[in-house]
Length: 355
Image (cartoon, rainbow, N blue to C red):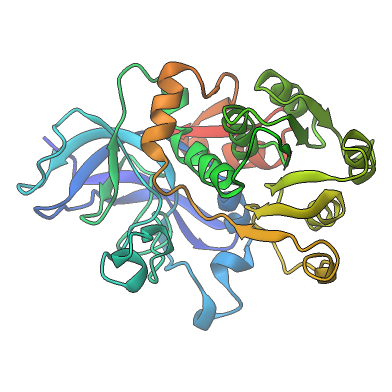
């Protein structure tokens, strides 16, 4: 018999998250009720806790979140109940749903660019798209759902969403075999970029981070060279490695103004700069480098469209590495310790929670 209430982590305001009793979601004929197995903490979740302007805005007029809301957009679980109209999954299947819930009606959705849906409804931020920091969640009727093979471990399954983001960013860079590729910021998504970029066989793959454990993991995942910006003038070193030309592709995954600056300095004329990292505040950069100096391509990267099935297959066949990325797992009731670990622990890469 299904419970009537469940525990969930709801976001009320900056610094005001509460693990409390809420009703179990009711589903329609086209929806799925999922018993959550594991949910990952994204850097964006930590920024949300600390009042990140991208989520909370400067007031009601530009606020993205509809609070109070159950957070969490990195999740997977098991089908507990399905509506009468749902045909593609069965009770007990392990499933994941993409972060974005497209409207399927706007110009972007109709063109197949569903991840840029004008409504931009992401799980964990809206009334009708409550997230996975809970015992149960509802997969919306417009959700893009994928089955998870039993061969994937729990630690792999919870990485499907961040690694889909990694894959999309790498694809945006259009990596060629002759390219020198730099990935700046080696958190879970940045390390996912390293292992995925390696499958493109670039001439040289360079990873940048200020934490030694992440630099070591990048080497393990296929980086040819790793550099610590706190110890090395990264732009100068990249110029030395490329006979003074610079890298062909620079993927910014740190969300740091300094990372952007060093990337603009390190990239070669006609290079490709992929911006994935999210910034806490507005940043400044020498915009003249883009056009008047180097004529580089600036490419944004948002979410992980059309990448979930490929990530799952890569994990299955071993071409996409995941070992050691999930460094900590907490009970969801200890969410405050989990968030503190994700933010402050020097050993943390991906922190996960289980209801």
